[in-house]
Length: 186
Image (cartoon, rainbow, N blue to C red; front, side, top):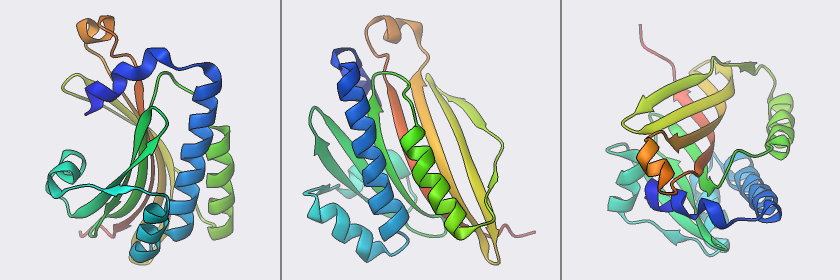
């Protein structure tokens, strides 16, 4: 799925890029910061937007064997995924393709408002990993809770294979995540 999504990158205007970023940021705020962690409220939001529930096999592409659900929401030429991971890691994410890196000011504004309203968030160490021919990068903030932690992340991933990039797979998959993680056991 990532490869096919990354192919659409070249035919997107700067205005479309900005508008898509704005819509996906608003979707994340509504679904993952306002409705989540209430799973039923999250489901209500995505279904009201006309999202299609993913099959278990489609969810496995993203979550592997972890428990959860997902929805696909068509947004113009692209499909966005809203993924709900069930505990032990309880998370809500919005994932969508972009043809290039983009300004995340809107995301920062909603994340900052949320983090200020809750208090106690501090930056986490950036995450970088290469998984096969995909580079994954993440930054975020976390606050410690009595029973674990709450985190907000931004992930971006792109292909690193030179041949595939030369063939046009140059886009980026963005993912905004709101996660509650259990306390690590000693």
